[in-house]
Length: 248
Ligand SMILES: [Zn+2]
Image 1 (spheres, helix red, strand yellow):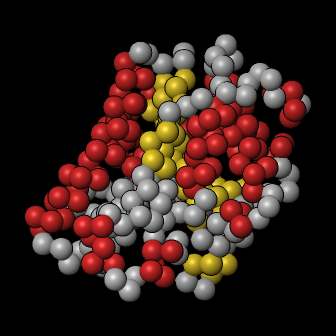
Image 2: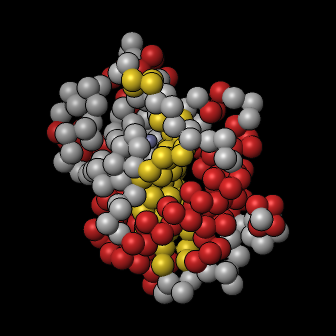
Image 3: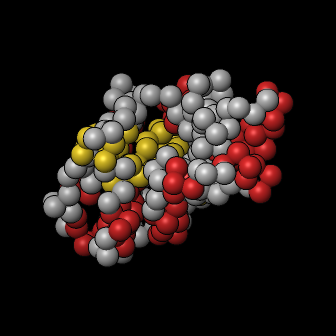
């Protein structure tokens, strides 16, 4: 059975479109922090998309305007900056940014499922190493629903391949969040059923600051390619098979 890889990056940037700039006066610090976006996530997602020849859907609009990784109606769909907008203006944000993004990802999954086979959707994220006084030491984590076998299998194989490449890294599962919490993958699981696997990749934000970050990005792409390859050895997954020998 074929496996189609689809990448997304919900928190790729901290851009505020000019028409909403007034809402964010004095919010520069929040916008530039992990609250505004996931530093390093878009660069990583782009590299993975290139290396694995996978489609990528991404947003560069700040999550503080509208949070693409929440369900409609979720109390944190809007932030303290955008919540004061009147209902019509909030609905406009949904129509202008939220729904088109959701539709793009959904359409890619639908199209791939229609061709038969399965879909692996990877949402690329980064997390802050310091959260409310708690130091987060993990380097890389995968969030998924442990009750779903397809997702568990992908996570097992991806982490195993990454561990072989990078025994120096602290790898975690469902950390610092649970894969079953409200979010894009959770919504799509419900919608698409067992032929869809939705996994969120979470990378510690201390990494984009390091010179060794490029190597980590490549290792993440390669290990994901290796994991995909174990599902469908006859299919090409980016670097496979050329670099597969590197981890043997
Ligand atoms: Zn994120």
